Length: 176
Ligand code: AMP
Image (cartoon, rainbow, N blue to C red; front, top):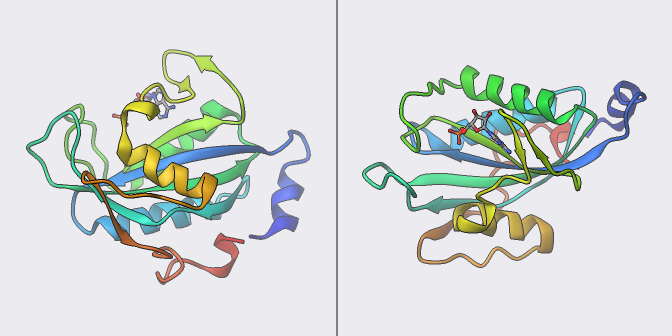
C-alpha cells in the first residue's frame, strides 16, 4: 500500500474503513475477482487493507446457475459512499457485468457491506447492506477478515487462502 499517495489524496476527508463483498460465477471466476481487487487497490483514494480467502459458494435466490467464487475485502477510503458505489459499479461494468436478470449469473458483483458506522438508505445505496445476515457467502469471508477465522459450511467451501497475493496482478502496493 502506498501510504504517501493515499494520504496525499485524502487531506479533505478522513479515511473510513469499509468492507466489500465480491462474487463471480461466469468464466474465469478467480481472475475476475483478482482483476477487480487490483482495480480497487489501484484507486488513488482507496487503500486495500485485507483480502479474505477465496470461497466457492452455492447460488442463492436463483439456483439454476453455476456456483460462485466469493471473497471479502477491507479497504480504507476517503471516497464518499455514493462515489464508492459508482466506482464499484464501474469496475463491474469494465469486467463485463450486464444487468439482465436479478440474482442471475454475473462476471462480477461488488456490494458495499458497510462504510464505517454509517447507516444510510437512499434509492441507490443502503448501508449496512440489508442482506448481510442472510447470506453465508457474505458472512463467512467477512468473518474471516474481522476475526481471522472463516469456518466454511456445506454451502460455502474454502478454495484457497492467499489467492490474491499469488496472482500476477497482486502487486506489492496492493496490500499491506
Ligand atoms: P446487485 O444486483 O446485487 O448488484 O444490486 C445492485 C443494486 O443494489 C444497485 O442498483 C445498487 O444501487 C443497489 N444497492 C443498494 N445498496 C447497495 C450496497 N450497499 N452495495 C451495493 N449495491 C447496493
